[in-house]
Length: 196
Image 1 (cartoon, helix red, strand yellow):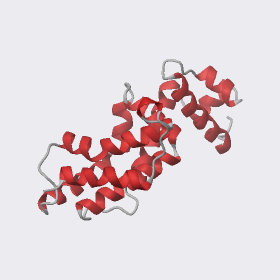
Image 2: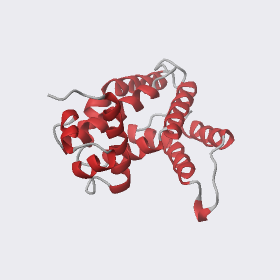
Image 3: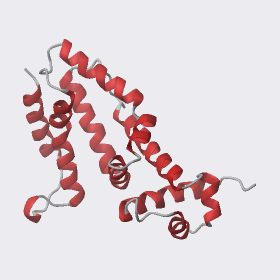
Image 4: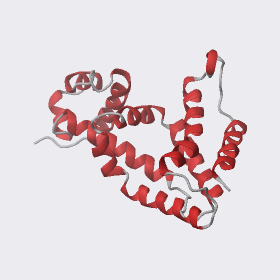
């Protein structure tokens, strides 16, 4: 039996992420991945049982990495403003450093793989964030809103700015560069919208 080669496995993951972003799930295949990775199809089956296994594992790994980055230097006992700012910093740092992984996660999270990926990668993060929101409610630092409205208002502006940054342009093809000033301006508006 052939052994795993960590370098090849990482190359395969990277190529798979690139291909999932470029071709989508429908255009993604093991033969094409093997060719683009410069490995045999048999090598892929050392790491993954099939295409679905590969996609689920890659999506789950991206999610676990993303959610572990979100809680760096973050505590659910932080004040609402301080904690939300840390979430923005962590999310922006990850997205700017890993645009392909974020694009792949987005594509997979809008697919039939979503539930499997989230179940594997989200559990601990969800508890931490729920505790953060509950603490903010108890301390009267957060207006009583539904979780869906909270998420949309709290993070929607950040993700819109990150999308502009990723595309390098804003509306009407105006060049765009995400600056600390623009992020701070949006963040302060979010705080005004969500706090009493």
